[in-house]
Length: 369
Picture 1 (cartoon, rainbow, N blue to C red):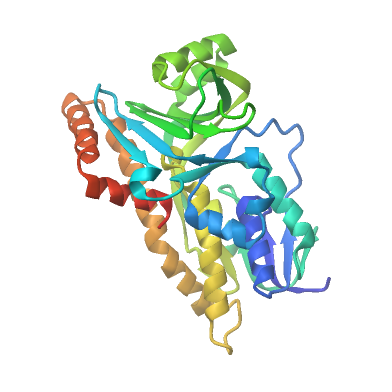
Picture 2 (tube, one colour; picture 1 turned 180 degrees about the horizontal axis):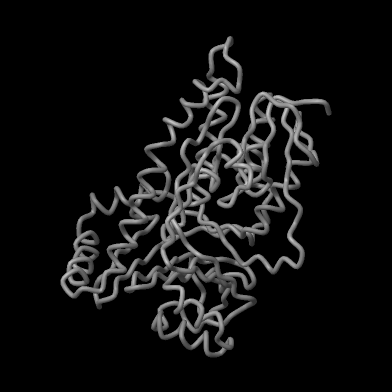
C-alpha cells in the first residue's frame, strides 16, 4: 500500500472504531497499532456505554457480535452520599427506556472490534506510517505522536488512583449499578455477567494515592473485608474473582485538537475522571462527529482541510468541556471534608431525588439522549 486517505494511529477501542467508521464511510483507511505490551495482565476493565455509543457500535456491526454475557443492561442505579438518606435512585422504568446504560466487558469489546477490522472494506493494517491526507491520532492519554503535531496536553493530576477488579456476589445483581460518593473516595459497582452470570460486578474504586496503594497491597481476604465495610453489604457478600489493577487519575485536554491534516480523538484529546463512566462515550462521540463532518464537507475541500476539522472540534467542544466540568466539580465537592460542605452535598442528593424533573434531566444526560 503506497498511501491512503486516512491513517489512524492507535488500535484501542476508539482507534479501531474510528478506522471502521471511516472505512464504512468510503475512505481508504490504514490502521497503525501498537504492539501488545509484554506480560500484559488480565483485563478487568468494563465500560459503561450510553445509547449513542451503542448506536455507533451497532452501525459498525460490532454490537451484535458481542457475546451476550459481555454486555449487561443497567436497569437501576443507586447513588449514595456519605450520610444516611443521602441518595438518588434512577430507574429505566421511570425514564421510559429499556435500560439506563450497558456495561460492556472491555476485553470482549476490543476482540469484537479487532474481528470486525478483518472484514472492513477499504481498510488494512500497516506496520509503519504511510502518506495520507488525514492523520487520526487515537493513541490514548500518553499519545507519543501528539507533541510532534504541535498539540500540548495540559494534564492536572488528582493525586488519586483508581482500582479496578472483577467481583462475584452471593446475591444477583438484578441489573442494578451502585455508586458511593464518600469523602475522599468514590466507589462504583457495575453489574456484569462475567465471570458469573447475574452475580458479577466490575469494581471501580478511586481514592487518594496512599489509600489506594494500601488497598492494592492487601491480601484478597483483607481487601474483601474493606470492600464490605465500604458497601455495607448493599450488593451482597463480595469476593474477588481475579486480579486488581490500579492507575493514576488526572484531568486534561489537548490544545489544539486538530490542525492541517491531523485530528486527535478520545483520550489523546481529553481525559476525565472515571466517576461518571463517560470516558469511552466521549471517545465514541468524537468518532461519530468526525465521520459526520467529513461526509458533509464541501466537495472541493480535502479531508485534511483545517477548516473542515475545526468544525468537528467546535461540535465536540461543548460536550467534552461540560463532562470535564461535571466530573471535576463532583470530585472536588465530595473530596471536601469540611462539615458544612458535607452537610450541603448530602442534602443536595436527597433534594435531587425528590425533584423528578431535575432527576430526569440528569438521567437523560447519562443515557446519551
